[in-house]
Image 1 (spheres, chains in turn blue, red):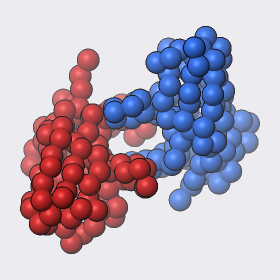
Image 2 (cartoon, chains in turn blue, orange; image 1 turned 180 degrees about the horizontal axis):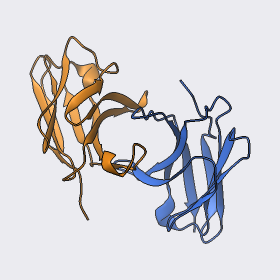
Image 3 (tube, chains in turn yellow, cyan; image 1 turned 135 degrees about the horizontal axis):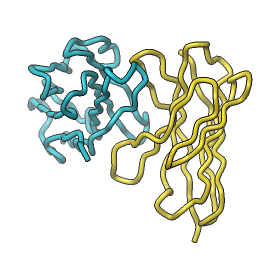
Length: 108
Length: 116
């Protein structure tokens, strides 16, 4: 199974950008890179996904390395409500398995 | 906003009892996933369905767990008999396969199961 590696935890200050890294050196050509986040006492929430090109949506941006062996989720301006566990996942067909994720703490 | 609905939100039961958890996927979604989350193991994929047919249930303990979709609006996860080690939060998620195989998954808020 293709796997991802993320830092266990990161801290950010409110209203500053946050860059959450993910390594996926064994990614194959058909694997999509998905990011989800989980706020306390809630189910995971979709953030963004991409294949090769960088992607932007209202929540975040996804920067994908040219060799696709790593990616970075960018929150342009962190708020206290962005404190969550962020998961980077390689999705193969219908198979979507979560790793341990990165716990993001946002300081006021 | 359309939501995935899971019932019950909380369930406390005694070891050996049958437990049934229910999930109502978003109307029109044709893929359904079941996950289990514990502090020790994190989020584990138990099973997933497409068009009500099970595609993979290799993550489930076969002897006691079963997952079904009686119709397009209901997915069930049953544990019989339940054991204390089954205590966890169980999440259901659905996706719109019509939008493409990699459309986002929408998660419910989970069923917190405690087996004593």
